[in-house]
Length: 229
Image 1 (cartoon, rainbow, N blue to C red):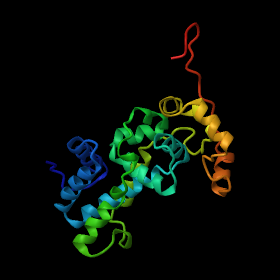
Image 2: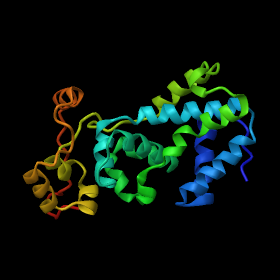
Image 3: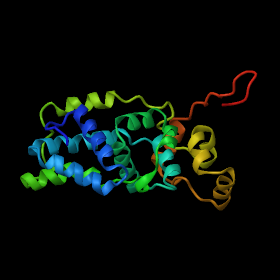
């Protein structure tokens, strides 16, 4: 049982990690476990949980991570990426930060539950509304929380290519572990030949991001005198 009664940027992650240990890969049980814990706290703590969830979810809105989500979950549209980021948060702080530092690290994470955890995005708001009759989206940020959210975002080290939306032909060189685990060169060639788009090419933001954040070359892992590892 969790003894946490106050949500800050440390206890937020502790609570999620405890939920993961208790419930494993059962997202319904994890939601119920978190709901029970937050229900036992005063309403402001549910509000704080909501803001931390939203803050970390927004901090992960990066095309480089979205590219990895597309590979990991076999396609990922806008709504799906919201739910993916909530699922990523539920994996705990270490997995979350590692994914933003290197999206390819997700190759080591089990893709259970369809890599979606929609309900987590709204858990704090639902509990706050149950307790107070008000929505978390309609109240002011609690005093001091904005500074905590900024500190939380400052914890994050991003991949150099985190802003860049990868196309099919770029996946193997930039997400080699995910590519090896979930795709084949034949699948990529078939997708390109069939005109299956990775993204909507008419999206202005997408065009701007691909132009502005051209990816850095990935350093070769081949060692002199030996095979690539």
